[in-house]
Image (tube, rainbow, N blue to C red; front, side):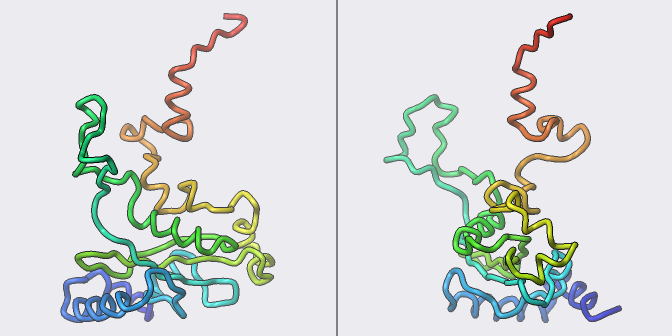
Length: 204
């Protein structure tokens, strides 16, 4: 086994004494830093490499802190002024994961960079910490490499805002099989529109 494989196996046992101590110390360290800052190198080099990071020019890693918890409905005194089915205020959940929210916040701050992927690095009772891999689409090392040229195209701008990253795709209900029939045709909206549009062909 190579070194990265050893690190991967360590992270699979997060309740071992080594990992509990390491994650606790790292969480303390991350809490002292600002909520969004650049990391000089990935905390989990094995995970970062599996998600596309390479230790060369054009790749950047940002670490971000996201406050945990559900999403309380912002209404005055809990009055939603609607049907009883929409009276919920307190136990509302956000449609997207905190990881997807983290990618979006980093993407807004670093507008010139492209979000490639992200991964979990720690959490405590109040926060979750993620590291986001970004790519500079104008760096020659990225533009000249056939494997990374795709992210330089204009269509890859702000992938994180449109649910195209790995974390963003998870909340879109995409997949194959009988569990994913609501998104046949690309998305929930496309499936709904197709099923609710009356198509009267000319020669029928």
